[in-house]
Image 1 (cartoon, rainbow, N blue to C red):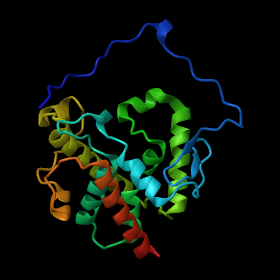
Image 2: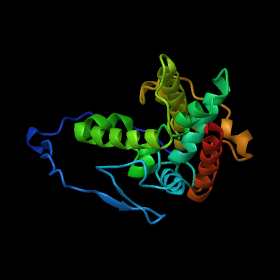
Image 3: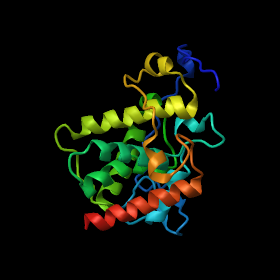
Length: 229
């Protein structure tokens, strides 16, 4: 396993700190061409700008943990999303396809943007980046009719997401359990057993290839959409 080092806490010189970007003209666009042939303006997304296959592949090609891994492959956001969904189903009292969709798509914006920002970096990217991701999240929620969290549900989701992160840190990236708590400051115990191993008959915690992650994510997305009709 690779050794881990704590974050650098040095403050950059005042003159090196970047100033906030100027507001962009209203007609500014940030186009991406998707595998389906559709095009998405990241700054002005609509719920009709991508196919399900585009989203699945985008999430499968977007990596967690800055793309770092102790395995031959990095861990995709698609695989992480399926892990969080599996954890949700294990704890849910009743089956609810729309609630399952909400868990599966909780990082859907990252698949459209092609970027999973390490959490502690997000505040440094500023309000403009937050606004961009919120617009993408809104487009995903509208397209898939994802319900908002009810009272208490978001707290449960956040815990599952953090437990998944703690587990990935240990089993995928190579952090120790003590480092997860004291360096990464995730206050939850990592799982020992991989919930996806039994579901997909795969090696525990091993990252999947992008093609396989996209296939499995897409299959789950299609199944849940059919159930939620």
